[in-house]
Length: 170
Length: 262
Image (cartoon, rainbow over all chains, first blue to last red):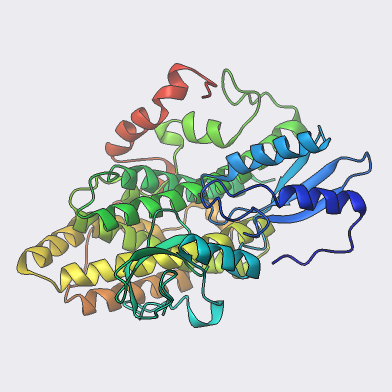
């Protein structure tokens, strides 16, 4: 989760507006929950400047997210908005809010494990122990490291047999 | 800004774009659904990386053309260089990708092997770019890409082992794939004139790559070829016949309708 600096009233208002924008591919999370919005500031002429970052370099949702931000802020009263696309520091699942992780789980997607236990570089490394979002069992296995979007892997629960997406640690 | 730096970035961008375009041919044709999704996920990463690199190259090119006020109109219908003009409007001779990545997909084994050879090269080179950090944009692109490349190396390496140490048929096919692709690996470590500026340390890059590849081949019970004639030229724009056909397909729309959007 991003740590916000002491913010002005206008900035807080913009953050609140951005919190209502769902991610196009995982609509249960807002773009703020996901850690895509990195910074909000107001320029000298009173216009908002928003820094955003892509989860994966090829994330096809970035253009959509930019349009959503412009439309939402236009409706909030800001016609001119500067969008800054930052690559560094590289996005990580550590930036996802706790609230976001809880929302993911309720939606049926297993939230990312904390970074320490994962990202094993070895070939045929043991897959992470991922908790089934349906029945909470850890008796699950990885079907594929690559899922329906770049940020997810495909798992199945051995207990309740339900297949599910895992938002993989990154 | 030096032309060498732009050329180096274009070389990296072209290699990822062309491999992405090749892999994309598998979309809907993978051996099983999960692996079809895997190879197309990797493709998405490669195209994403190519976009970051082209955007950076375009920025440098535009800075230069503004400074010198030289007439470098990128192309009819376009106001300035952009990721699109660089990908869609350069000719075959201007592309600086490795010959390796433009080779046809052939079977799944050959596609997997090509990915493994390339991703392993990318992994060690990008480590250098990230650690050197003298060019902060390039270092940032490298750092972000490395997170994705780690998945690619592991996934493709596991497949090389699974197929090499698999059935008689899969082993035969992997051996054939090595025979087909190995002659294109020499170029990975042959410095191009523009690489001086990036200070790529080939003395470190080659052994690191070779060790990783040898380890995986050994575990896959596959042999590392010895004394093979190496094809070169891709990095400086002399390509095999395959690239022209790829670009014809890739660039058709923008060549026919310059600047078209949808």
